Amino acid sequence: LGLLTACPNQGAPPDLSLQGVSPQNPSVIQGQSLSLTLTFTSQNGFQGQVGLQVTEGGQTPTWLSFSPTSANLDVPKGGQRTLNLNLQVSQNAPTGSRTLKLRATYGNRTTERDLTLTVTPPPDFTISLDPTSLTVQQGQSGQTTLTLTPQHGFTGTVNLSLEDQNGNAPSGITLSPASVAVNGPDPVNQALTLSVDAGVA
Image (cartoon, rainbow, N blue to C red):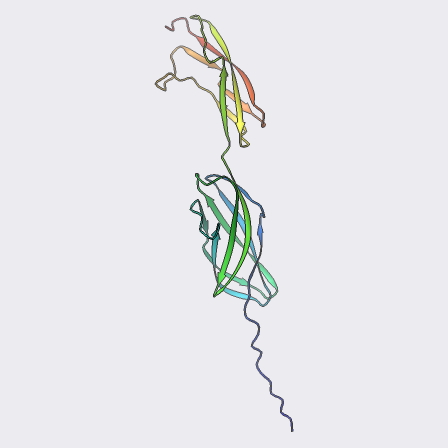
């Protein structure tokens, strides 16, 4: 006589995998923020609290903060869910390519992905004048050439003004033009005219 016993199906334990991060090789300017999309998958289905970490060389970077630090996920069996992770980079963050690790922890398990984040300086420009000294008769004008060199992708309009040693606009001396447009990566040369009123000492 044989006995056939039906045992209850215990089922596979919940599993979670951080399948992808988008964008894969993001870039961010010092002092600005970035939004990442994390994609989680599960073969057996997952529902619960997940803790999030961002590390560099095993340590939490002092120049970076992120949110959220935890989230509730409900990933169907064989399906996927996405989660937005916001990274905030400090103004003094080190520039260049940074190798980070994104880690999600649930229970005593972890799932992680590598992330290469490029930190760049904010757009800027430098200026120079040639000549840097002018001799102008009262009631006349003189010219100098401004060279404006964009840095780190700067484009836009640069406003120009004259100031004396005290930071005030000099009386009776005007500058033309009052702005310069930068439309690309190449240096911009602009002739500047300084007009002096007849009553200027």
